[in-house]
Image 1 (tube, helix red, strand yellow):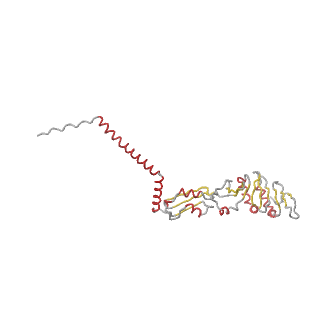
Image 2 (cartoon, rainbow, N blue to C red; image 1 turned 180 degrees about the horizontal axis):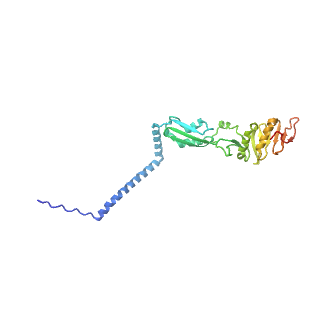
Image 3 (cartoon, rainbow, N blue to C red; image 1 turned 120 degrees about the vertical axis):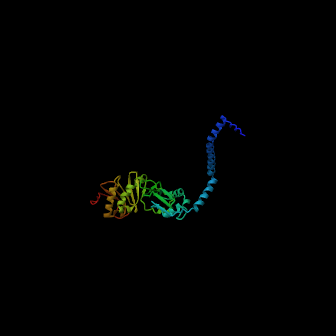
Length: 287
């Protein structure tokens, strides 16, 4: 017996067709929305102080178990900073876990050392810690308003944070310059004095007068008055006189060299046979 054919399926309505199309569009949007909710919740969770503390402890624990260790610590540029001070500031040693080493923390501690201008700290996962130190070496000591300030060649204060008494003792042999404007003008005078070590060894301090010229105060309290803008020829002339007459080793009060054609010496009153002042032109052998 022949079976009747099945009835034709109902044709979908326009509404059903519309909903089918919307489902295909809404699926990726819903997925993105769900991912956004999860990401936002994760961010809020990780941002909480308690979570950060737990996460930091966990990372340190993982770092301590990791096979990556420090195999070498290299530094360069340190002339005034001792290796012991650098090692203490770094806070790590060869063999310590390298992932536990904080680059930023070490950099902050190194920057606080005396005479350090700035540092660059590198951590390489191969096991190397590299430290590049840039120092600002002091060139002289500037006495101003009863304060003693280390300065560089340009007259800028040298960073000396944390300097101890032992550090300060290392710079007692630096030239001492005194007065307003002395810091900026010191380099040229000190360079000239370095060419005449005999005169330099006698100088205890250089005093800037009216921001125009210099007086040299010697260790035996003799004052040498230098001419304005003509310090170099005057110092060379004084060195020549000292070599032939040992003038600066005698009992005198001052040597006035402000006039280019003569030299005035003020003698101590107490010494027999020496009184008042004497003025004479430069010796013939003096250039």
